[in-house]
Amino acid sequence: MEIKVYNSLTNSIEPFKTIKPNELSMYVCGPTVYNDIHIGNARPVVFFDTVARFFKTLGYNVKYVSNFTDIDDKIIKKAKEEGLTEKELAEKYIERYLKVCKDFNCEEVYNHPRVTEWIKEITQFIEDLVKHNYAYQVGDNVYFRVHSSDKYGILSNQKLDDLEVGSRIDVETDKEDPRDFVLWKLTSDEGIKWDTPFGKGRPGWHTECCVMIDKIFGGQIDIHGGGNDLKFPHHENEIAQVYALHNHYIANYWIHNGRIDFNNEKMSKSLGNTVGAQKLLDEYNHNACRLMLIQSNYRQNINFTYELMTPAVNDWEKMERTYISLYRNLELSNSIKECGYVEKYREEFLSEMGNDFNTPNAITVLYQVLKDINVILRQKEKDIDLLNKYLKTLDEMFYVLGLVPKFNKLNAEEKELVQKWQKARNDRDFALADELRKTITEKGIVL
Ligand SMILES: [Zn+2]
Picture 1 (cartoon, protein in one colour):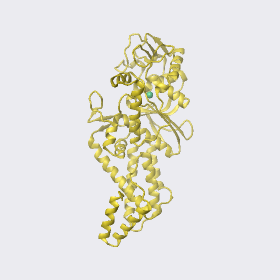
Picture 2 (picture 1 turned 45 degrees about the vertical axis):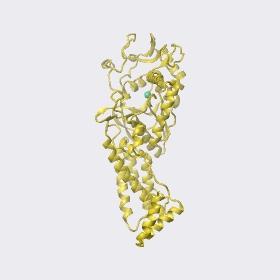
Picture 3 (picture 1 turned 30 degrees about the vertical axis):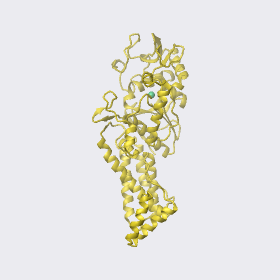
Picture 4 (picture 1 turned 135 degrees about the horizontal axis):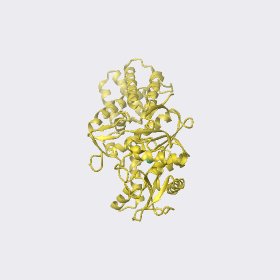
């Protein structure tokens, strides 16, 4: 199957090919664990989980890594406020983050490296950059020498000379060039620090991902992902450091997702208009939450309002209802069996997913499948083999999108009860049918 992706590095749709056949290496920048994530932060979590599920469905061995930035000035400040050590604070928010992932039905990733466990390797990487003149120490910091890299600006599509010394670039007086970025910060504050050849301090944010990718994957990877807001300077800086030292790109494909606004405003803690991911999951079924996120193309921004949840909830209810009807139909006639897929729809669905992960179009194919199933279920003489094919096809689509219908398979006793009810209805014995229906409802059996 031909897969195409929009590569942010070239700003174009490209044929997708992994470095190793049937193996996907993917790294997505994870959270700085000092607070709870909002739905904008959860978007890449759900989207890249869907990407991983898609590749697994195609038979790829997926190595998906996402880090935890568990050391940062924000963590130190928050730890002090909460009366915890930095480690305790980080662990607290890692646990809460993992609960969000689980509640979204995200599959476990291959590795969740924590920065504090890679300080030795990070230090070594910075030492190597200094040794090769790509970095220098001045005053209290070690900086990357941006003009030493002829790749700088390639991802964000900026020429080095045009680069503005904007708000996201620290203006430090002792730097050789205002665009140079910090690799190591020396500090004498009371926060956690490490003793290194540069002196006691902490790593800057941009080196950790380079080092963890290099050490965990052993070099270049297929996909590097993250939110659009990380493109510059974070991802640009990752590319520059790795290219300087290893003379290759850190990743072949860069995939960036759009952000989520709330009521047409950028979500921010200071504006107090963030929508917590856990809050949304506590209020709504996870399937509806996932649908809300993937019904838009991942590259587009989403303007979230709570009105967006109503169609998502209704859509999921329809999907689930049809799935359960189909399953019960086959279950009650003891005719669930292996019959293969409805190939036409399977191919259409996977090819939409393979077309730069076009989830909205993939969902349209899913709807067509549901429509067909409802037509067949209304027929008097049902094609059992065909229904089995639809069940298997639908199971795969749900798996890729991370959707899970909630119902229990019937045990022998329950099956008998439902069959009796069906017979009473067919015999037009409505009194008995009503009575059996009541028992069925009491037992919590969804039909
Ligand atoms: Zn990163």
